[in-house]
Length: 186
Length: 186
DNA sequence: GTCTATAAATGGATAGAC
DNA sequence: GTCTATCCATTTATAGAC
Image (cartoon, rainbow over all chains, first blue to last red; front, side, top):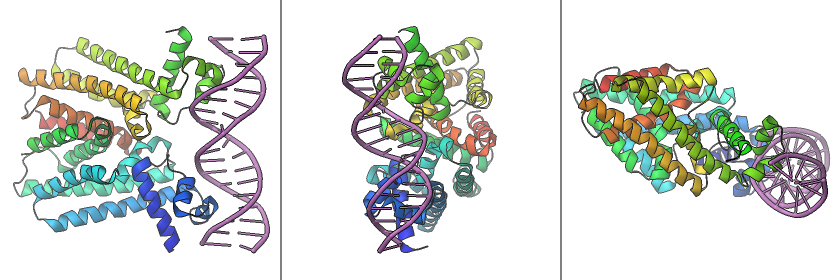
């Protein structure tokens, strides 16, 4: 991928996390990069092409986040804690939302090609949480009944939903909900 | 409220649940009602005015849903079950999403006046779930540690998040997540 | 209350020159 | 790869006649 193409993609990823997919435009990209809309179209002919690239970028981004957390500690509790804390402090520090959550928000507007790309990214996320929860239970760090996959699904859904609440109510609801989650698996 | 105004509001509520707030337009309303855009503006001068009315409509809608469920059975388990089942079968049957979830999806785009109106509706929803969870625990129907308020918050966040997953993955993830939730409070 | 007409901006996208 | 120029559709919104 050319430097320019990469540059466009990264700016688009930034706008995805602040404005959402449907609400950032080629004009936004054009303005901030100092090149014309036509030039952006040279690199990503249709917005859908850029959208699919953004899904893949999001998959890579998540993978890096997970690798970083996994490398930082061996404890399942600590890994979970660091993700849950990091997710919302990212919002507060940088004013950005998880790019996958941003894609979820616009899902009814997205072409099938993008929905298929999102499906894979969703699975990457679910797999990581499933791994952490299973590992933690095996080691006796967590205590819960049922399938780690299903508990991971519940948690990931709550995380996606949380962004909107935090935007309107601040972080109190989120903190309480996650404290409660931890109580349930203790 | 005049009949016409009410009619516009109800059509807008329908479009909110199918297309989302930012994606339905005065043109959509105009086409389906057979009157011009200018006439819609006579009833709701700015889209923001319609938006605030939609928040209030959503609060009333939710209140009716809860009343209906509360009147249908005395069991906390059954009430919870009926909501969880009803929420997603509403999507499948009518192709509609919870109007509050639709508002949440566009939250970053909404004016402060609408966010304030949403805040009240969120509280109506949280209060109902809190009531059900507290009641169920008092009666020995549920078994969990922690605050009913916080568990309600966790569940409501997961419900909001679930709509996007269902759209892409079907209802399997949702069913598994809710089965898991029920396991956690049994 | 409803209409025609129109404004002013923005959206994604393309043709063709350099 | 980037530009100018342009297209066509759409959005929210307003002025003023009926």
